[in-house]
Length: 159
Image 1: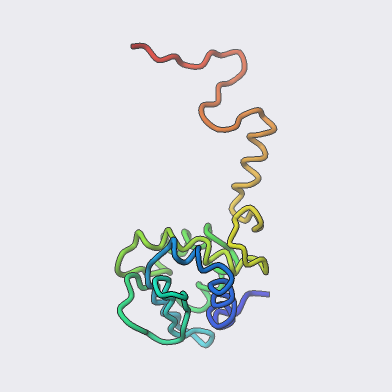
Image 2 (image 1 turned 120 degrees about the horizontal axis):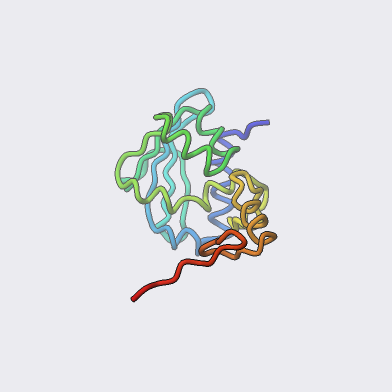
């Protein structure tokens, strides 16, 4: 069943901020989420204040504003980073202010993917295939870097 947007902002995010204020300190920004629709609303996530908070309404001056419909935001909560990128590229997710700040929100959005409030990507489901891709590469004997097909030499640097 899809997650509730109101539950996400009213319960899950505040719980994650209480349990992991140090992660919010790493983000150090203020976000305004303006979600339209029956399950929508407006919430401010102040990740600068001590302690960090997520409150209903527009409080202060946000550094980044994120706008979406409740249906699109719900799909982002349930679908993870890949769903968020697709929503942004299709114009369903609108970002105002400093768009670079959105990249710092990944741990906060992962709260919606699992009941584990760690914000630790290793404990989250591999919705975007990255964990599976790492496992395949490891089985193939590649730990990263350049992969060279069998029977061929790796390119050398000529100086």
